[in-house]
Length: 476
Image (cartoon, rainbow, N blue to C red; front, top):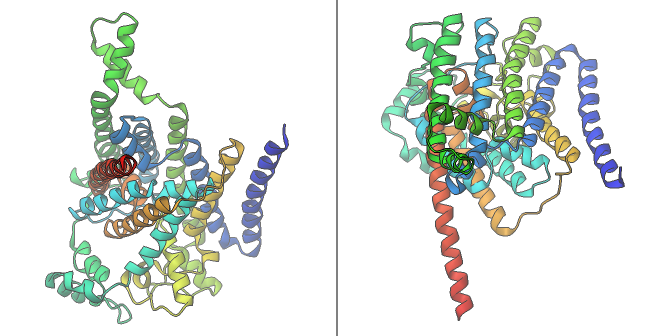
């Protein structure tokens, strides 16, 4: 073992030890902080899985449209199906922490904005976190840009209010929200209370008149109809248009003269198993994401609390709680809201009023980052990715060029806006919702695919235009 490898192992051990000591120390302070420790270790697992499998939604769509490589897209579908299978079991036992979101075309529009942004940024929300753990400076800029945009966008009003339809304003005001929440003054507030909250909440189990918590609803409606069948269809499409030709060419070299159904099935299966690392990452990621819901719900039952905000109140940490006495506590893997809370907390320290809006003041709160459970999940995700990168000699500090930094910031801004319009990102609005049978998940996903396609086409145009200018200058 050379000195470089020994140093990497020591750094990895140090990161692991940090989260271990933090968890033990938190539990020693009070049993309630076990809640935060659970978030930490699931985040750590997510980070290791994402880095190991190079798991990024942006890469999945970019590789598919730009170079015709479906490996990452296939991995995402594998993870989604596996998460859905575990999630169905958790739902059927009554231990799910998931709540479906309103469904309408807003999810498609939000997905388009987010999809363009993640291609510009070179990474999705979760991908940017794990790449930050690899030492990627551009990814860190994406995280900071996204977080800042959310914190600024949540209370935004002014000229944006001119874009608000009168019907949204009237509906928002009619909701009778607490006086401290100015639902009629902010653009996002009026969008949420005046439009989003009026949309139907639809799950596939509900379409069949079944309860999401019933065995039939969880396994037939949400898992089979809502996830397995659509995922299988998408993978068939990807096989036909992106993988089939290369498979046929390989088989012809081995003497195949005619493709039979058996050959097609073998080709389809070969595509599924094309990347061992991505498949393994998808397997663990999907199972862990489902188990987190089960464990968090178990802790809520143990402590007699539906939200970690209740635990904070008992401990006297009521600063940053919403008017409902809650803070953001999804109970499953989620990205972007906790990052937005970080910046919201920072702005608050500089005197910004950001608790008079629905996003922070009514729903999510802005807890101190030291006790922000989902926030620690994201930090641990970065740590888990760093450990895996160090162990595989893939950690390296990468300072972004001015051009990459610019695209990272622009992409982060678009993802921040898209995530608020869609009430989530590639994880919260797509991966989790699809896997739990929420109809809005596939709508966001379709929008995200369309946005990624637009982003790839724009970059192709931009690159061609840039090369033309460079060649023109060389000729002169």
